[in-house]
Length: 484
Ligand code: GLU
Image (cartoon, rainbow, N blue to C red; front, side, top):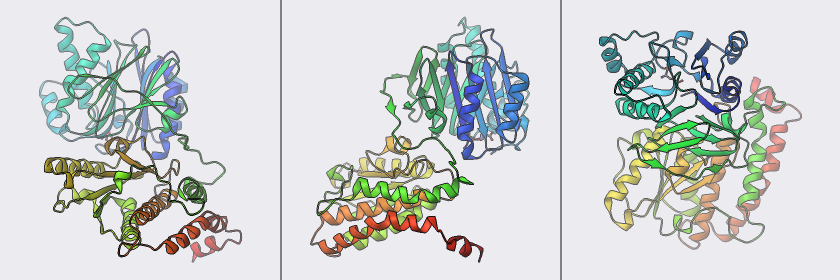
């Protein structure tokens, strides 16, 4: 899943879109594009294969006017990474432009149906069905006497969304409407940014952080109409939703290499900071309990713990289960979230379920947590009631909205695909949890004794300095080992 940016306001949209896309480059992509609509109702669409620099060069040569626009970096799933498959995709008359992150699973059926009605496709993507469906819906509404308006575009998007199966986020502009754009999400992230005199939308916070820190994360199934005057948010059933925006927390939301050769090296060097932040946030100065931002109910009466995760987070979870069992004496099991969804274990009482995902957007982990919550609610027995805790680096993510208790690892944005500082942050979150459980279970079998706990905390306090010594590696030992 790649990047979406959209903007509407009083400034020219194209440079803002290009800047937003630049902030999403770290996610990887094979092509990019933008579409803008100007006050004369002209839609400009520019796309280019390869690096964003190719798209920027095209913009500098051809321009794309208008204060309303959408942009995309694509990671091809359907159709080769070529310019004709790059987003935005347009309808036949080139009036509707759409960008999409994700996959439209039933696109083949929709494509055949549209082709049978005479629509000609210009790309091999799953996405192109959307502008054609919208075009037909807008034509139908206009024939019924409706004038172009933000509400009309919203209505058209709401009408076609139930036809799209899959996990996706979309942004739409329409040439007849220079003052509005519509965005929607289903099981793919999308956040609205409230700037000064402009409104933005993006699939990830770095694209917004340069413009505003006031964000409104969209919930699953929601659709929003953005105009220069404000935003209107609607739930899946079409009812208007009012929600207070949140402020992006202080952690670094901008992907910046600083002076390092590449992001992964920078992130390896940030590990001592991740550990130092953890020590400062959680470790008691002397004697007291660990400071954790969790409700006491998370701990009360817990008899077992199940941890749901995928990939690297699952590896952290395996260490976590070991720590919880060995230090706090609580039976703990780890499940692949993708398998848990299809073969959950029998329900056990008084169970804490922990979901671990760096981005807070791992679809399988979110789906497994939602399923666990649902089946525990169905059980309608207080002993089986859902208790969900999330461990993430992105508390503003979908995970943050799904579970009511969050442990934020606070490692700052991680660009490298191989996890470094976030893996460390996840391990430390588990150390904190295991110690916190041990503190509440003093004297029970298999639980750390007070002196063992003190010794462990004293050891963990050394961690930032020890890590610093390791990564600074003044005599090049790490590099020499890497070449062996
Ligand atoms: N499935 C879409 C495509 O192949 C979108 C991929 C993406 O999320 O970048 O064009």
